Structures are given as structure tokens and as C-alpha cells.
Length: 251
Length: 251
Image (tube, rainbow over all chains, first blue to last red; front, side, top):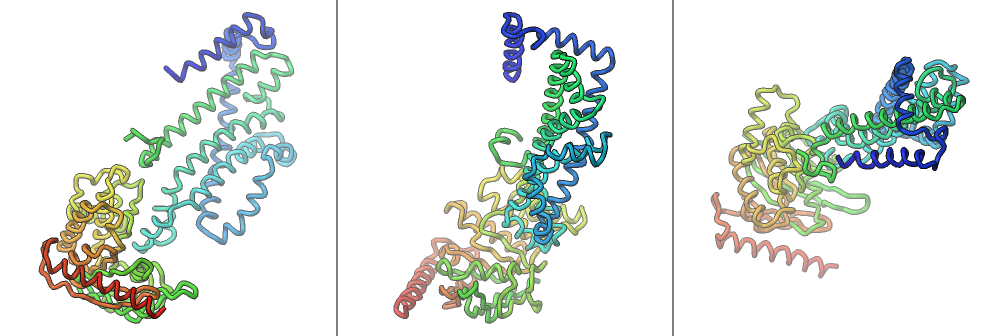
């Protein structure tokens, strides 16, 4: 019940601010009008199409970006040499605001799907990489010694000690990466898409349809929240062993 | 049949600082030897070298006839802290060193080891659910499950309260009776040394070397109130003070 109080208050404030003339209805259409517009878009098949396209782009980009991030972080985390070879470059690239790549990517890979997915992947990559790399660096040396006493080889130590120990950081990275992926998909769709929630935002701006913009924004909020809920469910399942404030009382 | 542990002319330095200056120590098969000495005398270093965690030393460490040059499958080590893997259940922690063995045999070895430290009821528990004493018992079971012929213990009970410590000493003796490993125990608790050991080795400090060896000629089970043990404790205390005084005179 408690989590729904604030959204209800916001919708109520939204409704009353239009009702009592704080905003004009064409600037901020009331909730019911937005709902009607959403149903209208749905009936015309446009809303499903937008959502599906955006979800596919996020899923592809997020999967690609986090996969590459996990591979690279594992390599640089476990090999001093790989770290010396890769880390400075990655750190330098990280300081470039990732969105700055967008125009260049469009120029290079065209305005089709690949540049959009690449941009989303780029957005997901850094949070996952940075968190997992830090997690691997932070694995307790004392636990590694236990594995060494048992004569485990490097690959076995990585699989049985380092990765499980760094799992909390990996999941933190994935959650941040997913947020970034949703941010970047909207930006990617600003540039020359013909379908998708981000495209619908720019398109509705040109036709001054604030109701359709709000439909897209609410959809993005819901989808982002669903992604995070799913990842938190995974987190709770995989990390119930942690003895922290977050796992207190859970068995 | 367990094998002897032979340490001869063992020297170790950290940079310019000599830590061990020619330690000779012979532990007979299934014998219990306690090493005591002031902090900084190199007791823990001695165990780390014997466990193969550090291979930069001069001199010889042998298990039976074999030279120790890295972690050895016949040598187990219990650390000062439990160092359990927090994401594994107690049973999986105990099974950690058995990865190469087959399922049925591994299960039997694990349940034997858990029974030896009376933790059978907690096989499925996570480390965060254990008390300090139980966690250290699980660590003891993990070291015993591979049936090491030499078991090294590095101040294993020093972080526990006096009552838990006494109980764990009895658990250790019970487990030793069951597995009969050659046992080298580093401790700073003189009561623990005279209660558990067949011989107590006194290490002098900076650099560490054997300054005295006292046999404890009492049959097990021993009575903690035994005046002979109390007298030995006094003798050890005096030897430690003599050692310090002689250092002060020469300094």
C-alpha cells in the first residue's frame, strides 16, 4: 500500500493543477485525457509497436554491452598485464560523456538499427565494467588464500572464489547499466528513428501533442521500473547469503 | 598413517628484516606440537611457509620425504579467522577442497567431517547464521575433510571467548583422535599450549628461533586443573621472561 501513496498524490496534484488552471490543458493534459490518448494509440497499434521496438533495442544493447563488460572486467581483474594494457584506455574513454558518441556513431554505422543498439550497449557497458572490475579488485585476499592452500589453479580460483565474491558488485553494475540503457535508447531514437518511444517523444513535440509525450514518458517510467524490479528479484535470489542491512530478516 | 613434518635451518627475511633465523623443528607423525612466543617472533610466518603460501625462504620444509614448495595436498591449514565463503552453505564450504572427488564419496567425507566437529545439524546453514565458535568449527572441518597428514593451525581460537575456546580445544582433540594428523599449532595462549600439545616449542623474537622445547608428559584426556600443567605454564612464562631479559641486557 505505502509505495502507491506518492504516485497517487502526484496524479492528484497533476489533475488538480490542470483543473484549477495552474497549467493550460494543451501544456499539461489532465490524466484522463492522457489515458484516452494512450488507448487511442493502442487501438491504432502504434503504442505496442513503439514499446516493442524500444524494448528490443534496450534488450539487445544491454545484453551486448554487459556481456562485453563482464568479459573485459574479468580479464583486467585477473591479469595484471591485461589491466596495464587496457585500463588506462578504458578510463580515458570513460571520461568522454558517452552521449557524445551518438553523432559519430550515426555517421559511421548509418541510421539503421546497429548504431542505436551500439549506443545503448555503450551506455550499459561502463557501469557494468567499472563495478565488476572494482568488485574483483576488492575480493578478500584471505578468501583467495584459502583456495590457494587447497592448491586451486587460477581459472578455478576465478570461477569458484573471485566471481561469486564479486557478484554483488556485478549486480549493482547491471542495475546501473540497465538504467543507462533506457536513457540511451531514448537518445538513440531521437536521431532518425521512425518507431519507438524516443521517436514518439520528438515526433509529438513537433506536432505539439503533450498528451502523446506524456504517454511515452509514463511508458518509459513503467518499463524502467519493471527492469529494475526484475534485477532486484535476481539480486535477492542470488545474494541472500550476504549479511547486510539489505538482507536483514530475509532467509 | 600420517607423515612427519620436518623443518630445518629455516630462514626468512622481509627485505632487510630477518624474521626467522634458522628454525629447526621436527614434528613426529600424529604428534601435537604447540609453538608459543611473543608477537612478532615469526610464528605465523613459520606456518605460512609450512603451508606453502610463501615459497621465498632458505632452508628445508619436508612433509615425510617431500619438499614443500607450494601448497601441498597433504597439508591443511586453519587460519586465525574462519574465512568461510559467505555464499556457500556450511556443507559446501567443508566440501570446497574436495572438488575433484566424486559425489557420493565427497558427501560421505563431508558428513564425517561435520560430525567430527558436531555441526551436522548446521550443514545447510549459511556462514552468516553461525556463531564465531561454530564458524571456526566449520573451518576446522573444511581443513580436515581432505584428510591432511599434516594440519597447521594459526592461533585458531584466539578470537573466541574463554569458554568457547575451551570447547573448541576439545573439539580439536576429538577431531585429531578421529583423523590423527600431525599437528602444528601456533598459539599465544600458554594454557592452550600445555593442554593440547605433546611438546611446546618456545620461539624467541626478532629474529625468530627456537629457544626452548618443553615436553608435556601427560596422557590424554588431560585435566585442565592438573598441577603439572600449571607448573609447566609457569616454567614457560619464566622462559619467556628470561628470553626477554636477555634481550634487554644485550640490547
